Image (cartoon, rainbow, N blue to C red; front, top):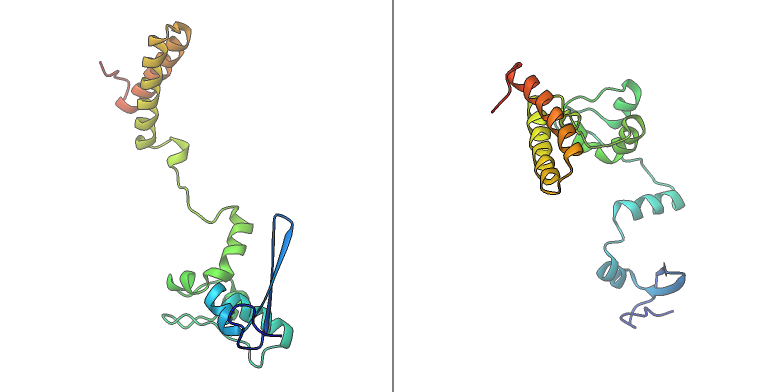
Length: 162
């Protein structure tokens, strides 16, 4: 079968894509596939080919900075240096997500326990107070004012800003 794109070379790749339940098939040569969809030698495709045909020698990832291999990490549970996180990122992300629940560090800012968080919360409450007063929601305004006083006292050691 000839490549459906160039109509010159033999089709060696059968590309199937399903979009909204509609099936689209393309029979392409390796060159046209690489041109349209990216290299055949990508890591995902290499893993697929290795799984289908077996690999002659397993590739061993090693950190260029400290020399730690991923098999060392699997055996000990320890990485050798900060560069290991970049080198073994693809392998580490699923484990980190499983253990931590997230892969991005959020820090303490979300808890509003530090001074920066309290200042930010104070500003937000003051804006809400202004809106409540404009809309004549005096009960809400009183509640917001009490909360503002509590935060101001904790920030300024018992003294209220005037």
